[in-house]
Image (cartoon, rainbow, N blue to C red; front, side, top):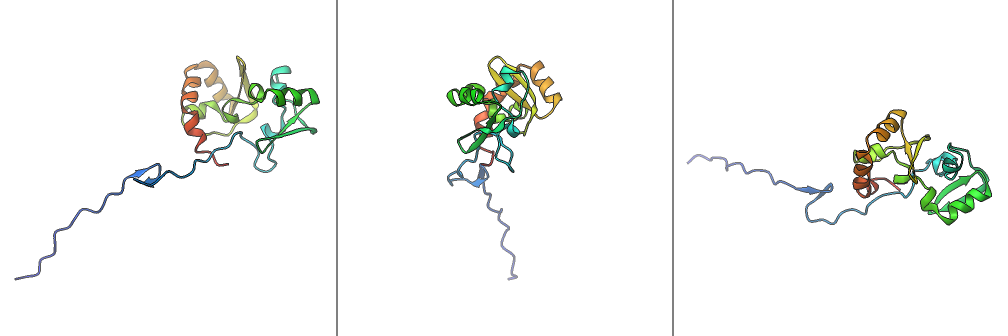
Length: 159
């Protein structure tokens, strides 16, 4: 009898869930509470979040009017603006932690440029580009898509 090779067997298939083999617990989620400059730690590149509403434009905050909240440094143009933010950060902080809502609507965290913004209703939105801003303002469905995907997107952002 001649030696015949054993029939080939199919390789084991490993099913991955969230980038891990099936059955393993997920890795701890990563996420930051606010987009910030990685070199300075400043939120909004140092712009005053209250000024977007009061002045209708970004105004540079001053080091003497600084607040550290949640490990993030916020700067303000005045002590009054700092106090307003400290008392109601949810009103003045940008939506989606400052990430571009068009990216969030697509399921990804996209850095924004604090000089490209829109205040819609009571919310501040920041955008990566003028095109993204225009698209967001024209297509109201993007806000709903961003809100639906935000919790998932937030888990993918490194702290």
